[in-house]
Length: 334
Image 1: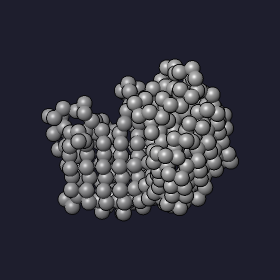
Image 2 (image 1 turned 180 degrees about the vertical axis):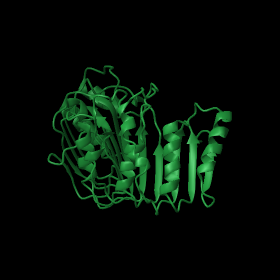
Image 3 (image 1 turned 120 degrees about the horizontal axis):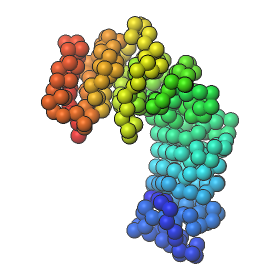
Image 4 (image 1 turned 90 degrees about the horizontal axis):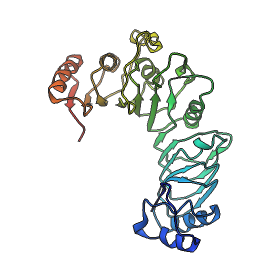
């Protein structure tokens, strides 16, 4: 079931809206804004008891959402301005909460009871004093909110990210996003606030560098989870690609290139959206120094890289590799 929003209207009668929301041909249309909160909650509850999947995207005007279902297995919630969330779903395996509490800027209040949950993606504000997660003994994948690498004391995202990270001690797969704002010269380096990470096997590290040097922040993360066996590095960029200005403070964090790091359990590395910048080459070269038993590295170039340029960049990458490491180079990921 997919309930979408986009600013449109709906039927004037709540009963008519209930009928349309229950139809298969209305996915993507907005009938949410025409309904009072209590009617919307009733609809969600009734529908969620029959479906294995519930998706609510870009919805507005709802303060309190409570979902009780014995059959739901997958849930994605994107309800702007939400203040309170209650989920009781014994069969739920996959939960994705995105920007529900963020825009209200109030303390998030939530109670999640999902003992079978295997995947938790919480791209939202998180406060352990008001967001209560029940026992999640089967959790395998965790994705907290984005972490701002350079910011100031008013940054509210980082505590949400760190608090959720520290909620768990051991997990198989962690997805972590490091974000650089374009203009960072008046900001502080925030990575020192990340003092510990949970015990993980797979690290999926998304780096949105905005043209800045990202080696120090990525090194800091790897230092805190040096026992990983697999690393997936996504070198994403903001929509508008920028270059780092001369004298940028990101250059000040260069000690990582000479610091010792041993990733002797790391067997496989995947790098996506490689563009061939100096910062990227420097980091990949260091990976081969740290990962002494690396068996395989797969590098996929950004789709802006031409085939001829990809061949040249691939040769440079091959020169970093050890003989016992298998290198796979691809222009785009299929």
